[in-house]
Image (cartoon, rainbow, N blue to C red; front, side, top):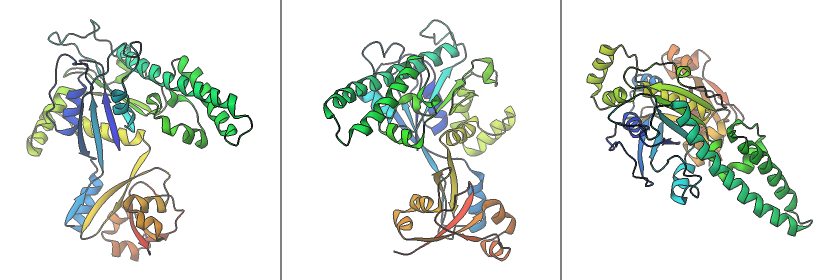
Length: 362
């Protein structure tokens, strides 16, 4: 899973990236305007992995991971200046979701490029740039389809092209009303048709308001953002980055002193998972305890494929026990004895927290 961190100049997105990834990327009070990307892989905080590791005492413990990409080069007006460059658009499009960092605090040493701090305006500004980019892609594709439809007559591909054209026409009307594509209700077939376009406004969006050290924790105090597959949270960016640079013991003491129950970054990672419709299941044993990531609604064969394609190809059955049942039983043997460990077939829908053992033959 990849999540792109975006924001206007001086939005403090690199501060948030450093806090999230325990990195030390250089922050600046200005933008170079160049397409630059800082990348880091972060472990997804999940106390269930630690509990399972304590139970099985494996040689290796592997949590789920997510890659964050800090993308520079965005600014107001880039759409009207000829659109995003290919490298910038590619850097944005590869991400499964976008994390939009917005500055919501005043700092006289770092003047805001627009002359004032206004989170609602800044969110609208960047959203508009994404809308313009998607609209350009839609219009160009519609032109090509229209040309092909006029030439193809009754060829077999005409029906598919017409379906795509009609869907894009619907999206064009939506984008012209400045509504993101993720607000459009799509059928599974329509979603599949659009997958290759990698539209920016179709991606789930997590708006992170950096409220500084003394800001309000209530996002509604700053803006209203009512879109599907979108959430808004407040974060004290500087404080979170400071915590991230401390050792585990120092960080725990620091948080106790400030009355912080957990880093806000943990909540941000969990929200990213929720927005993408993802969940975790686990495999356990003496060699390794590991968290795996699948989409909600994935079946047992798809979960097997997340581990290895051979397991999906030769799938026979899955031994499954719910995490809470396993913890209550104390061991796999006790869970089996209590009737909590069961055999499931290929169509079983995996639940968040399932502990699974795939039986296969190839």
